Image (tube, rainbow, N blue to C red; front, side, top):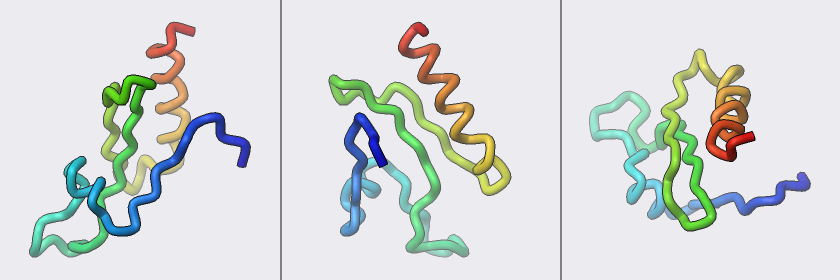
Length: 74
């Protein structure tokens, strides 16, 4: 896809558990991680966290890109 940054694949869900995206037992969607986007800088510091609601999925990428512009001082 031409990305200039790495993407994380987490098939065993260990990273997701560390980042707290797991759902609690009893949650209707237990076993399916919450939809969360993390912006992580080159020093591996989490700079921004987005919990994405179902009705925000379409506008979410634009918000992330706008915030990246601010973080990168563009």
